[in-house]
Length: 194
Ligand code: 5GP
Image (cartoon, rainbow, N blue to C red; front, side):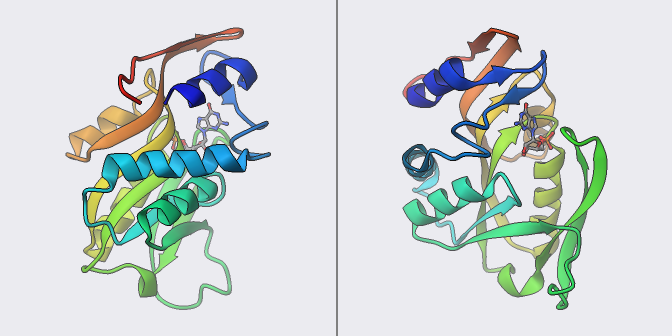
């Protein structure tokens, strides 16, 4: 997605060879028109499949899952980190190791909102180590729903996330694929046509 690559080039802050900050337009302050465009792009990629729910993890995947849900005309669910007291009903849960925070946490979703009749698209902001997305895939599997694919806004292709998901036979699409980066420099893998 050329417009996204351009924004990353202009506004992305590359803190190290592995960490990219996109706080000014994607995951702290959010450019709402760009978020909706991202949702429509996921609809273009996955819209030929009978998706019934979009799934993400709080917090920074929410705006993109919502945009994809709007474009696909289906609800989105965000997995909660830690079990909230308000989530008193039965839940599906999975442990996740956070790359950015270097800590382990549990993600949960209520069993009321996902089941064997669902066809799920998982959406997230970043695909890095894949830990968060593997946790979500485990939850989908546990629920008996069918996982149709994973859509990520930014993939850091030099980290192992994509291969972990592809090993499980999951179709993965990322709107901007970073081959390598270092402060002041970013190289994308050609995502022809987007
Ligand atoms: P994972 O390593 O599980 O693929 O990434 C989990 C989460 O960490 C992503 O959804 C994203 O919120 C955050 N993350 C991973 N790498 C980066 C990065 O380079 N920059 C930012 N801003 N967040 C990241």
